[in-house]
Length: 128
Image 1 (cartoon, rainbow, N blue to C red):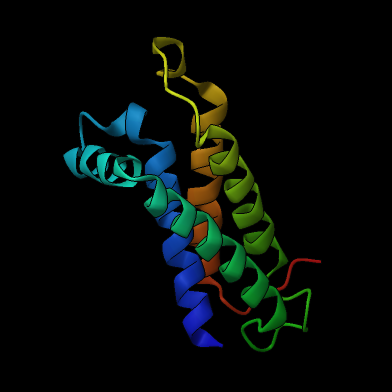
Image 2 (image 1 turned 90 degrees about the vertical axis):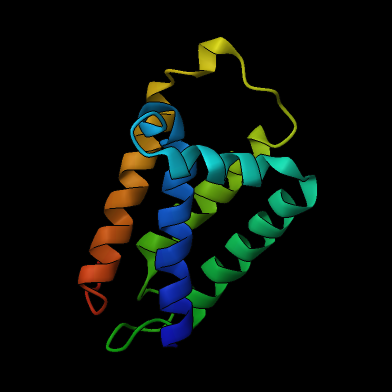
């Protein structure tokens, strides 16, 4: 379904914004506001994790045509699952100064942004 396609692209872009806020927050101030909103209440984080799991499941079950069922949007679904697990692991922790320049988090942010871009530009592509 096309609605889940749009939601998956939106989720990937917003998750990349959360991951890249420390690197580009001084340039793009809306990233800092978005991270502050996301971290303001625990319920917002839980809703984000649940929505991520639901979006990943739905894009696997209902891929964009002509993709095959279950294998059509496997790369964005795997990326969303990795993001859900990453945000679940980071949910209860406070960030320290050492986490400011985290190269692994920045790499995950760039990979997520790349997957979102490829998923948006080529919705019918099937990577098996």
